[in-house]
Image (cartoon, rainbow, N blue to C red):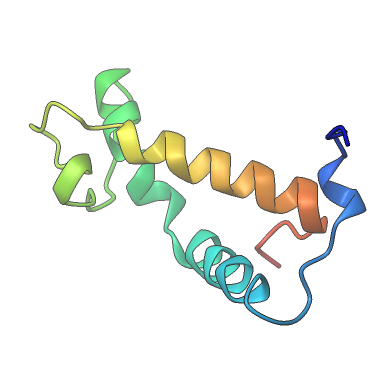
Length: 89
């Protein structure tokens, strides 16, 4: 037996245990405030930002700022590739 790659749009997790993480990821991607996520990038680029930055890893003086934005972008891209759902109206 040999494993074969497949495209994300070829698989749908519509019920059962596999659907729960998919729904949670969709909710998180949809609920995230992009202005808040982009705050540090704008400030670092000299672009004004009136958004309240997220805390934790995204805290403006933290050494990991920007780290969770990469995870967010990956989650959004994978969600779109596997569902076609853009996550926002």
